[in-house]
Amino acid sequence: MNNIILLDRNKPNYKGNLHLHTTWSDGRLPAADVVRAFKEKGYHFISLSDHDIYTRTEAFNTSDFITIPGTERGELNPVPAKNPGYHFGVLDDPTVEPEQPRYEHLHAFPTPVPWVGDHSPQLLIDELRSHGNLVVFNHPEWHLTRFEDMVKYDGFFAVEIYNHATEWSTASSYGAAYWDHALQNGKRVYGIAADDSHSHDPNWKIPEYGGGWVQVQADSLTHSDVIRSLKQGQFYSSSGPEVYDLRVENGRLKIECSPCKFIMFKAFPQRGPFFGNFMSGEPLTQAMMEIEEDMTYIRVECVDFEGNVAWTNPIFVEDLL
Ligand SMILES: [Zn+2]
Ligand SMILES: [Zn+2]
Image 1 (cartoon, rainbow, N blue to C red):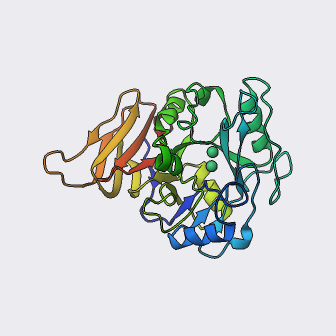
Image 2: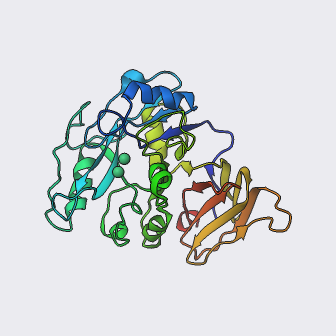
């Protein structure tokens, strides 16, 4: 079995929020204020993913903070004149040569997207990709998306597995079961935690932003390096804990993280082990498991004492053999 390093404790990593809203759609603050709010929270990058309007905000970029062009495309529902239906996160991918021109800053998309049959979400995903974008299947739990949609549709590179706004408001933010459904059916997709924040008010006692993010390991803080790492799964998602290192060494998967209450290896089809110091309550900062050759994928969840989670991306066992 090959040794591989998925997250390297010695490499730079950058904190980002790939889903939020400003006054360009239904958010409360203009883009400049949202950028300032995230910089003050120590983020390195964000995407101003307003509803059905594409943003290119390189003007905000500095040496230690960048914005990733993108949008959130929605207004697609099998029931006419009803919204929300499907929502897709859209991120400009500068590492591909698109078949169609890239969307320009403040390009406004026609809404609603007509429902022309069950293949409508696929048509939308294909259209977004043809213009040089990565696509994320946003907040499936909140939309009560059908599980089979995770298998039926192709071309999304990630599932939004934690959406802070819907946890903050309606406690329906965890999409990891959808993610597992896709993975168990052979899809190679990653998990993304994000804010989907609209207000960005630093005075609120129950914060509506800064609650879900990705931590990306990249060579440098540039649009293309961040996107390249996202596409390769060189990141983890979190609502609290940190993952310092994740690697396969001598047939074992090893993780190091900030102090946590539980570390769970989610393997398929044989469920992996889970760890916790149940007697002493002492925090865990590392764990490992033996990889079995007939497992298809393994991902890890680290849960801290407040119940916040860090989710690693899956390793695919066939890649190790
Ligand atoms: Zn949405
Ligand atoms: Zn949103």
